[in-house]
Length: 109
Image (cartoon, rainbow, N blue to C red; front, top):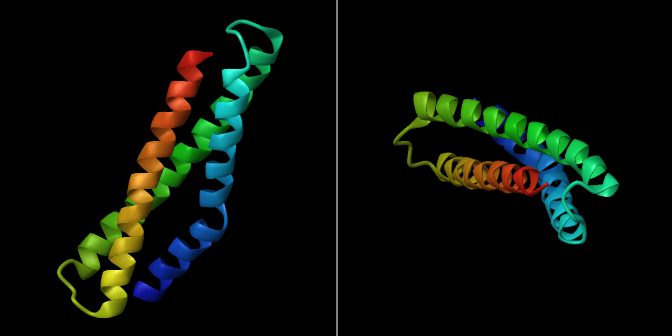
């Protein structure tokens, strides 16, 4: 149902999305201060791998919901359907950006 998809979208907005965005900011700051191969960089590698894994799971969940939405509600013009579509599109873009960012940080270490 659209309500279930919208509930999951809201749950991610209150949970994983702010968490990953915060991780991204903190890791970018921490990485900029480290030299490759340093003991601190090795510890950061572990954290970045975990963050990347979380971002990939987020991306998979969003893609599943987006695919389900397309299957069930594509072309719907009701305001709640349009709002849900916008939410999912925003999440897809954010998930892709976070995965790319964490991959880039991982490569820089």
